[in-house]
Image (spheres, rainbow, N blue to C red):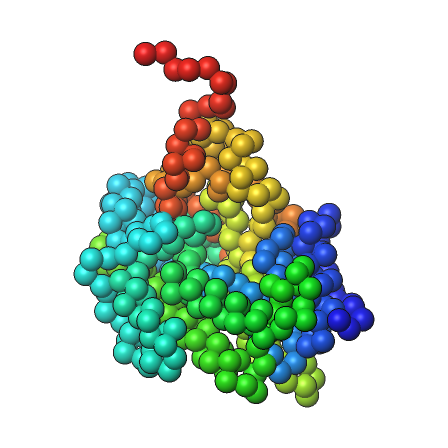
Length: 402
């Protein structure tokens, strides 16, 4: 490995494992420049919240397992009073118009022009087309969500008059097809770089002047369009069910690799759990299910590789959250903050996340806040079997009386 290069870092008391992963990434011979966002935490290879510019190469696990994970917000011409008066209609739309969970799909696939594109350029991609089609319009698991809330726009912006709006916000990616592509090409990259030590093999890269790199990049870009189509269908379906339309839409990827330039030098910038924040570019940075999210405008900070955080960032693992908290704990937080939760796993409890307000304070030089989103009605993947046993309280070791 080459001598480790320096990188810029935002935030305080970052996960030491994430910092170590970033330092490993900077030691790669293809690395050019890096940045670590204030929501950083450990991932595979590159940390979540890691931004890495490389020369003539692409790193599948620096893009992420969920290729093109994405945010989309539709701002509606609906007074808040109408939303509150007809909240049941909004609940029904969320429950019926999309599906959450690993492997979820529609028996009658949705139609979208993305399925008319060329999926035949390699066998691995073409073999996933039917699965991708069936899952089109679904939302996945983990931290993916669909939610309604109140958007506070303090000044005229986004082509809208200042005020309060009902907004619909979604977070999801490229589903099973994207995960399979990530796994396939990451394993291929590992085989092509046997010289990498075990601790660095998730950072294996594909050369962009060779067939493997070109093929992965084409597959990644297709997954980007597929992810965008997922969001487009979810929003169209939910809004059509409500008889509403969007006044404005804001959206962005945060797991992707982009062809950009540092000065005159062409590079591939990987943003793994990082929001594009070029000067003037709009993006969305969500909080947890019970915390605010933000519509932001990038300031174009080159040291940050024109990036910002993609959320609050986890402060504890999923397993740790499930061992520490109960559904009673979750319900108390939701009640206090006035959130209606349709479904979610205990691993997504707000206390498992950092403070989104602190994260935003640490990146004032990266983005300006345009609007603040307060969640009200939230749907995520339902809890799995491991979690249902902890629905009401902590385990006591005592058998339940019959």
